[in-house]
Image (cartoon, rainbow, N blue to C red):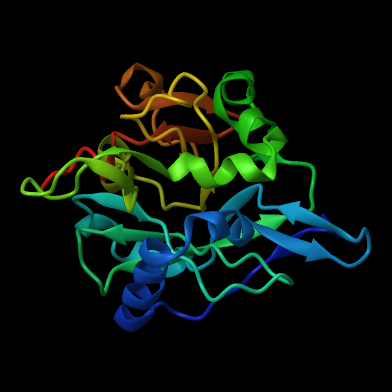
Length: 241
């Protein structure tokens, strides 16, 4: 773990949330990929983020009993080649006072929990993310659709992903949460389909929250004490207002 790069952050203010989510929405499409990479001076190459970890898990546990919904908002800081500037947020109950940043991890053999990446993720989404060419990443966050009902159809950029089922499981669990991890992924079944977002984030929660989570819609797998959930919907295009 000595080569791990983890970006620790201060508490997220509503101003931070607004500024960085708006920057994500306005960033030039050809610049998006840069926010998921940082320059490694040792190798003189760019490292790609392999996961995002919630740093302030203590504060998250304090509001756990209040959880009704969980969304992952994509956000970026000002571009800086020396650090990963993508800074996704977990927002609870659509409340800007219940926002938790997920800090980036790179330059490490990618793992889920304490074991190698489970086969279902390795085959479905994670390997595609880790091995994709950098120029492909810009396209993952866009599809043909609309954000508002009155809008004409056009290319839209995803702003957040909903994780409905895992929210209820976290709230109902008798155990405190030890770690929350966001794993980037690409669903190649969606890649190239103009009406679908192919970026496929997977949320990992430790400890294992239920012995029966694999039977629930949207819960993909449990492995070595970690529960994995995929999103229920991306917005846009599935949130036409």
